[in-house]
Image 1 (spheres, one colour):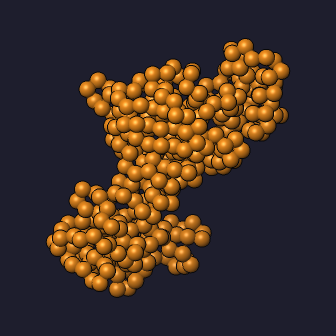
Image 2 (cartoon, rainbow, N blue to C red):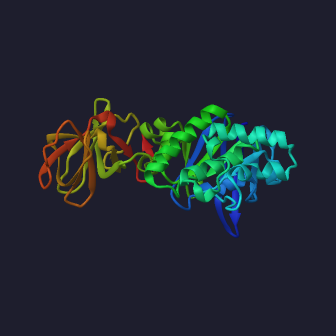
Image 3 (tube, one colour):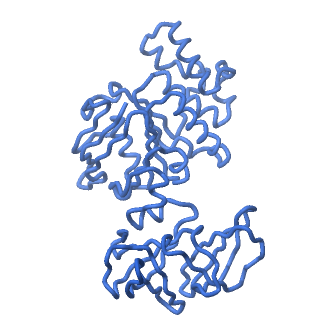
Length: 357
């Protein structure tokens, strides 16, 4: 079922931590709240769950206003960072716990737990205790405990952060498959933008309790609204370099970087910008190309990853620029090279961090 927030706010004492957030999450979608620690993403999720009171605004689930409704009556199920499994109970008993509290008939419990176990590939582990399971299996049990409640909305609060890197990748794939199998609305909180990019139908990027931008993962990657989103989405991150507007050249804005490596860039920007205005240009690692006539940088370290390498370079003012390189294994460590970027790949941000288009 769909979830809508209408100018939702949350105050802790005199401090407003969630600031008039509005959003629509369609039925059956996989939405991800992403942002740095303290941005308000977990607080927002807990407000949807009913675990935090709402100071202003309204929360609707399936077009029903649940702002003042108890958590147990909202039709949501939450999976936390901690598995929170009962160590003395078997996998079956852990997954069946809420059903037995609700006095569900034994045959129905068997059916519902069995189906959830089948979906999560836990059928062979139902008689085991949590101590006999791997971290990924324990997290699947926690998810199965939510599935058997047949909720309208699944809420995930950084459920993979306690797992090692390889297991996180495997669990991301499992969550994607799970979403496709059951087709439920899922809302997921993470600080890891790679998780956000790989899981979401729609990402909401938060900073200081405000949604900075919302959209499909590649839309945010290719077309960020501001410098914060541009820098947060993407790994390795986008590089930002101070520059000055010096005019226009046909359809492009002409910008000159500051400092001793002053170099002219052209950006496919249609909006007007005053000559002499201070801006920042942003270029992603894969959009830099090596050019002897380009901006001079020195290569400090090369990360060789097989099919691709990342050159960690610096300007003389110590600004770091990461350059992606493919098709060559020649070592450039310690060397000076020139780099440039095509106009369509040069993004421009004003002094307030807003994108010039």
